[in-house]
Length: 324
Image 1 (cartoon, rainbow, N blue to C red):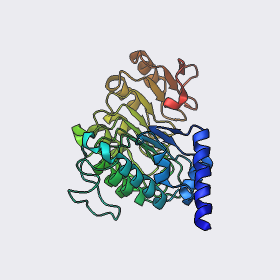
Image 2: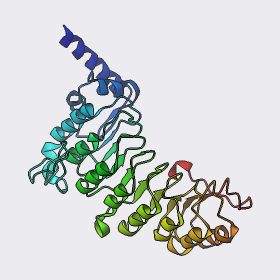
Image 3: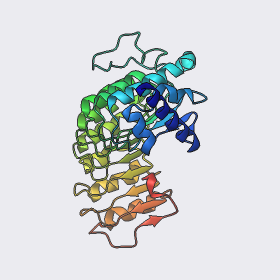
């Protein structure tokens, strides 16, 4: 009787997903009730993926507060299984650590042609998720290009390090509001040097990072073009001195950014398009005016709350604020 009730509940959940157009292969977005049902085990991950026309390349579970590593494991394992027929044509990735934090062998799912076809995974605001989730991602999604972990408090330097070693193609990672993330995570992201694919890094409210850690990323990630340090410990002159060729930068809310750091951007980031430099006490027109003159592509520049800067310096040319 219980099995029949569970099957009926899963069928109802699947029909709700289909009616709401949340099953849009190859993208799978689970939110609200659907995400809660997956987290609670009511909705079978394998059955859910069978409803898709092809293996998903993008999954969003953002905001599913009850999601735990066990439920994520079932979903990622199902992704790997559904991607198996396509694995031979997918790009290879280095071996990933196992879910028990040990090194993977050469024949692991993440090495060679194993793992899923998943390219984007958003777990932002999944507050109950354990650090083990990073090992599961490393094992089952070695081809990942985008990863959102904003607000996942359990994520720490060691977990990010394992991800960085396993996911060689990672181009974008959001670690905003992860209190345990520090310079060790940034050094791990920068360790690939010239081979790094990282182009976007969000560290909003990451108080555990420093200017030295950001400088390591600036030196070790030559493709980096978008960096958000707003409210983080990494918003310092030392960090700004290391940055090159950025197009979007957020360094608001810091007393450790001065005219000297902003002037460094004039020559190092001439193609800057977006700049958020709000709530600063050491930035004046002496650096902002040259920056505005020497960055012709600047479409959005915000300086609200900069106490030493006269008004009228903001630039707004229709760019959505979310791009910051």
